[in-house]
Length: 119
Image (tube, rainbow, N blue to C red; front, side, top):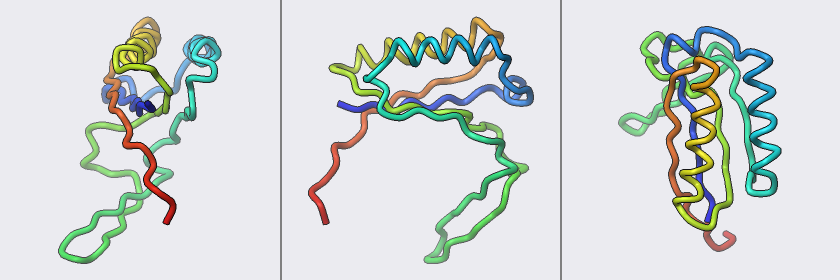
């Protein structure tokens, strides 16, 4: 089963760029994850993005940055794991790497729905 991991640093951690040491440790981590990592990626600052909200049948578009944003998604991974325990283990190690470099935050892990039949 595939699991989606979403990394959200605290506001204090999100204001600084990751150190070369953090990036090196994350590179080693994803090398170890190997083929289990289906897709990974870091995200650019919210000033580079936009938000779409559907409300009352309309779609509203707001360019970043978003003043009301308290949580900023900084990265994600999709991993293939045999069990939720395995996926949670990968996520815990991912979170630990950040903590070891002084980055506080949250990693959310959720199982993904299997793809549906072709349309």
